[in-house]
Image (cartoon, rainbow, N blue to C red):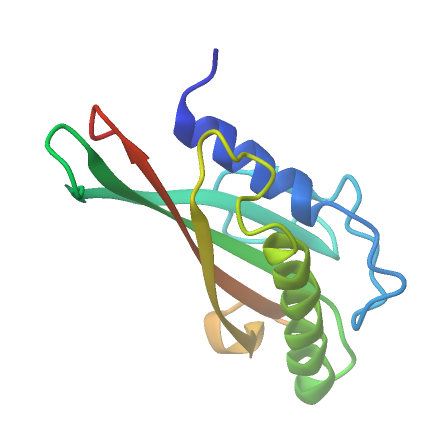
Length: 149
């Protein structure tokens, strides 16, 4: 069986790799999401899910740990100018967050207690990625274990 962290990463990918035609962005992200960090998207729209870190704290009882797995989602979108790219990035990350938090245990109730998201949206020109809007979502996934991992 895959590790807890891998199962969560794969579920995050599955939850955002959907068609948002009826959402704010109107984008189809089916088959446009990968696990792992990238510097520039191979095409638009595109997204990546990467694992940032896991931290553990003592749980409420002896032998239990509270784990926080932190993931980063980068969503890359197009647009004709800085305003359009920034707004498009806002829209896609909001669509993705709605999909992620629709079930706060991300459909992994045996592994996950809760999820929390924070996001930003910016124009890629600021980071040397011309003509691309970048949405960033920090996803914190909370769970409990008896091993600390």
